[in-house]
Amino acid sequence: MTVRGTGPGAFWRGWLVAALVTAGFFFVATNVLDVGESARTLTRIDAGAWATVIGLSLLMAILRALRLVVMARGTEVGPVVKASFLHSAANAILPARIGEAALPLALARYGGYDPVRALGLLLIMRLGDIMALAGIGLVLLAALDIWNHPDSVRLLFAATGILVMAGISAVPAIVDATGKLAPGMFRRFVERITAAGSLLDRNARIALLALTLAIWVTLGIAAQVSISAAGLDIGFAYAWLACIAASLAFALPTNGIASVGPFEAAFVGIVVLSGAPAEAALTAALHLHLCALAGAGLAALSTLVLPARREGRL
Image (cartoon, one colour):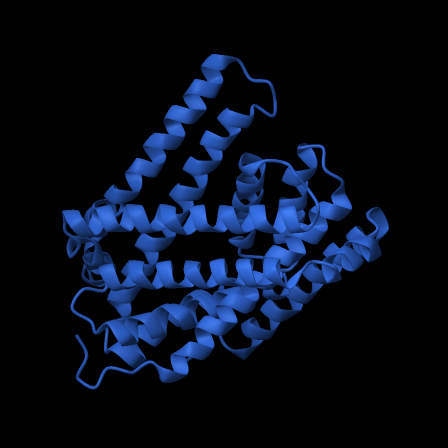
């Protein structure tokens, strides 16, 4: 039996929508910007900048894998790292968030991990990422004061952002508590998902917070390198905010092929607010995105030498 909204038809519809989103972005960009100038600048970026941002993208993949190792307690490290790298690559390429399914499938196949419980790990990670993006974004908006808010509003933004980021460590407990609120007929299944939260002790929750923030700090540094390589000097706060906005756009369920389109549009929109020319901002966005794809691809290739679990399922 095929569930409505799944199967080959839904898969190809996702690719069609992604192609339309990417084509729409380039149609608008070519009519509004001098895309040729952006492309020429991109080809002139030196090899050092390419290597640096690809290296930082690989570091992000490693940090994500370490976070998953902390969370998937009792599973061998090699298979967990393998699952994380494949998940990152699938997310970078596949449309409509289809790539998220790679994590529970890969953990089950290579690590013998319960795929239903793996959904809980995915839920905890994604909630933590969203909270990190929201918290960092609020703090940066307070620091940059783009819209000339009163000091009291800026202080509120900053305080709220810090509290939201600190709350990442509470996500496992929140997820675990949610399972107990499920209706009776669904409770056993939901509790299998949310049980992942109950397995994380205090040290694991602190590691979840630290590694999640480290991932997004690394992306901010990569964005700054891409922006500098494009010939811009706008400061780290704007660079970080640009990649935060681009990452939120990347997370949209309707996205482009390899997420090309919304990512670039959000990134360019923030960089332009700093007074930078849109063409150079587009160069930086494309450079960062291409390097991120390369980093995810290299991480995925490394899984060819990573082992799979030899024993039974947890």
